[in-house]
Length: 423
Image 1 (cartoon, helix red, strand yellow):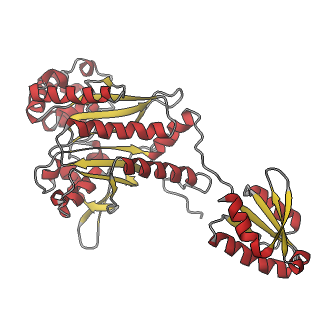
Image 2 (image 1 turned 180 degrees about the horizontal axis):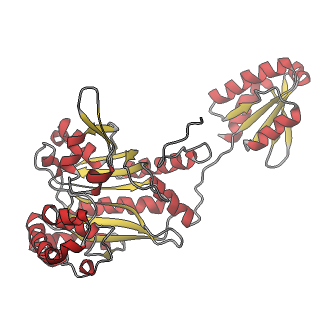
């Protein structure tokens, strides 16, 4: 019986993995410019971390987490998102005491959610995300959003839309919560069992329900923006003002709530408007979480961040017919004729690689014609041919595959000659 890959996962093969590497390099580069430092956290954490931070009323906690008990009878969970683990690390390592504040971090790594696989959505997926901890300044909100938008722009995406909302502070959310309960309670029996449970625990989550999104009460539900107090309204307006000054266009959506319980004040999503992208248009999202650090045992610390799926980013690039500048070619392929030449070719390839040149040779004892075909398959820029006769004369023939021109070079200067051509 053949063993196949688990449902909802994927093998990223050579030829495709280079696209991922390019995207990850771009992510690291933009974080360098914005002064965000990389952090790497464990793939699994204590389950309690996600119960306390993500929220026990969320779909992630209720339906999607990969949770298991280890041999020490501890409940552990494969991380379903990145923020909770970053905040846990921030608290555990007392980063709030560092001289450089705010603490600005980024991560790239696999996350795990048990959900129905579909286009661009997997049970194991890769997120790139950033977190800025320690500042209540609306400018840091604008910075986080700007980084996300600039990242997409750096990859060539043009059909993206920023959607913005505010969930307000605790006082605003409390007033809005009461209004939602009064709105939904008389007809809550018409909603799914999840929404019925959310009515008392977290009625805001009803607005994010996928099953009941078409219910008439959804469109008439009280908006959080109607309940923002003066401080929350001023904060929201300042974020908008800063984005406008940065020439970053946005749309306000009072129904945007995001799927995690820890958000307050600014929340946002970036969506693809590319034709043919699909019904689910969200590429990334994030927001401010001013109570999350305390929830996992740290001091009162404000924070804001966002995360994006690399799988969905690749879908957006495809929808806009964007080809990333990723080269699959190698610099030099060495063709050898005869036993002594084959042995010497192994030395030459080794020396080329030491010099920083991407080099390859035949390892299947193929004929000359087959070796040239192999060089074509790997898109070699140069092909060097070494036979017994060339070896005796201490020379090697070099062919430029783009022009067809051929030259003869001395063996002792061959490596520097090729390196000068390609590096």
